[in-house]
Image (cartoon, rainbow, N blue to C red):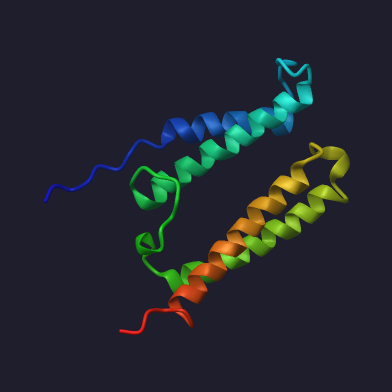
Length: 138
């Protein structure tokens, strides 16, 4: 069986990093058809986050895709605990972004980080339940 070649991830990572750099530091965006530079900046930031996620997925799982199926994980038990911790830290960061740092960040940054953190926590709990109490009995 031929070994599968990992898909290219560098263009996604570079473009995503540049878009995030623009969103967080440079603030360069056209008004767009909606006549709002801040909305365009948000779209650029979300697109950058999506590209960074695709790059991470390709580096981590050495395949194209978007959904990290549980059978792709080498250590579901350990990885789910790490993911739960990162999700909780992301939710805490979302609170900081939406409250004390609100003046320095785009307005919906706290909401977007909360969504990302909650999705991480949801996946971690799903994996923990799938390998624990809800595991198939063989």
